[in-house]
Image (cartoon, rainbow, N blue to C red; front, side, top):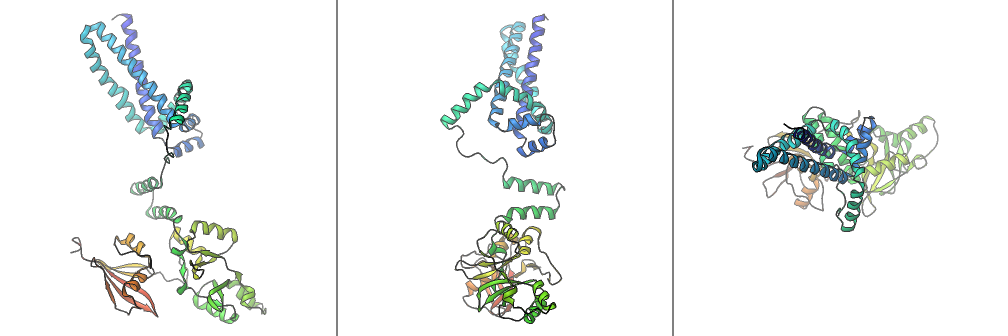
Length: 419
């Protein structure tokens, strides 16, 4: 073997190594997320600064790597062909082609990319400074690409977010399956995503369930009402319920009673803070924190009193039901048997469909199971009345309180797995 052939073989090995370097760099630099890059920067890892700069222009990464990879592959193929022709004559072209394809697949593509997928962070930190230097060397070419891209709209449309809400949820599910996230933690994380899409109407205590007090009532009546209900705040109305004017705090009432101070409910109450039903609860929580209020009055689209929302109601959307010594824990959906459930009439039809996988009809004139029954019956129901839907589902009125439905039995139609 001549010295020239040894030099060419060495040059071929270098080109093959460069091909593997660029292939692994592509996988590592493209697959690593911006969130992970930020973590590496905060940890002060070597190469993290260069990695952060590269991720600002992801197209430049691909262009630089493709140029480097193509040069290395073409050079390796040319050198291998030259050596083979020198050794085997015209037959060397076929030999060189087969040999280069095998070596490029093993050492230029499959091997490096497999390694990069396993050790993404480590390889990204190692290759980032070198690829950043290459992008700087290719800056004139990249500058021309950027100008042409703007002129011919190569980057049309808004950039896709690097990570979406659905992807985060998938990672949460994976974390639970692998044991790194508990079931309670998964539910709370999911609640955070749902939090911003929930309105005051969905969590408010409806008008018919709100305990109120008139501004002309005595302090003795207020104390009795607080004692019977276990509540700490009561909305105050004047003349009629729709005319809500304030909120009475139990501390002020007991302080006035203890000091024997002559005062009225109207003098002690705080001004009511009104919000529309459509108010998003994440915004509402911020407003309540700023205004230092613990209860707001919810108004319907006509300006009428619709219900109240407390800070506790909002927090329960994140952490689940918060029970105190006056609360009785009672499930809103209780399974009685196969395909039979006892449901609180306040449960929203949409939520019940999500929870049980049912297909109960959703309408604009109602939102709850009780509203569905009222709509389908067309009159105030009696205890024991049954409504049957087209798909065989039956709704039975189990408990009434005055003209209100309290409990409904849901009987689902038999399915093959329940027969």
